[in-house]
Length: 326
Image (cartoon, rainbow, N blue to C red):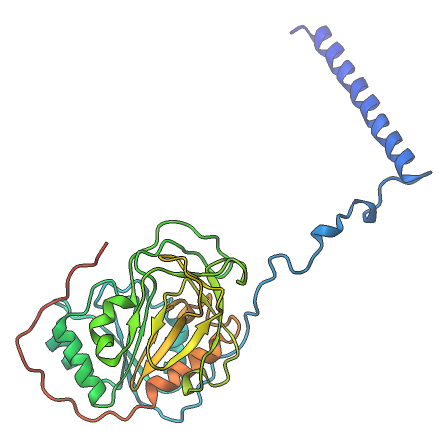
């Protein structure tokens, strides 16, 4: 392009820009009054100012442990394809160690077996299995039963099998979850009348920023729910038993059946407790609502048992449990 043509086009563009700017300013002065223009108040849309939009739940508090015991050994399962890591269990681990207890991880070199688990539990006071993805074998279940009979405390926490939601407290549901579930712990639960359902719980009418974030409340009196008014769970799976301690509202539905009712998410039978949601142990959830109170109660539960010596394991080594179900 020649310099003369370029200069001509630039000049035309500047003239048009000046005319457009003048028209905008002029119309603004007419609409806003003499010497005015649009004020911030005039541009505010009241319907978008609600403080209730995406209002987050309270995320503050401390994990209080009331038990005066110390020196207890808590073993955390890491041998069954558990869908959690140490970072996700940090609130639980920190609460235990800060109160003078020892945390060990069960990681047998040659895969889990009844004999190996029995040997591990013989030096423990409590056992925690979170989101296992490999089913416990019959021999392992016998080891856990012997541990319970000796006064050991057990906590099983899981997620729905075939889980497809993810994200933090305010995360949007997305595909790609694993199959970890407390149902893999079923052989150890069933002798005590505790069962774990399939699918996840959701509520489209009463939830915390996401249909899978549910408010649950105490269903009865017990040490595990002492001081708890409301717990928020994320994509919990239903649990049942004679002593259900936390329930959803009756508007909650189960993904596999679409049936609405008040579902249990925490139950206990003697020295065995099952929690249908492992997210309350996660740093993203530990301080939501009264979750930290529940977590403190769970720590108290784990370290207040009175364990006696366990018998020697009997029967052949069963080897690892079956492969994960997909």
